[in-house]
Image 1 (spheres, rainbow, N blue to C red):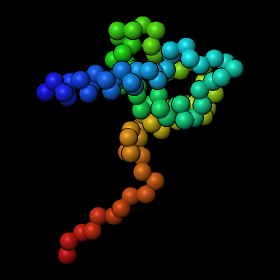
Image 2: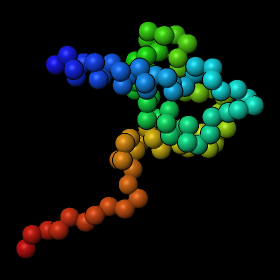
Image 3: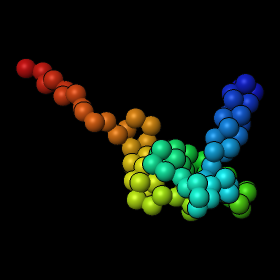
Length: 94
């Protein structure tokens, strides 16, 4: 049980290192499409972290605009692997 707790805490710390709104982006070096995907995936963790660390936000304000927003939105609605480009058909029994 303690091992699981340690793994969860370490994972959250690693994810928070790449959280949006930590002032690691600037107008000269904005977050793009792939950063949008990443920030969308970690949005639930960023939301919880923002309760305890006011400097953290769930959305990067220094971004490239449409492409960041598209990546962020796709990650939010798709989650991890939920956005599939093709789906297998289920066979119906006779």
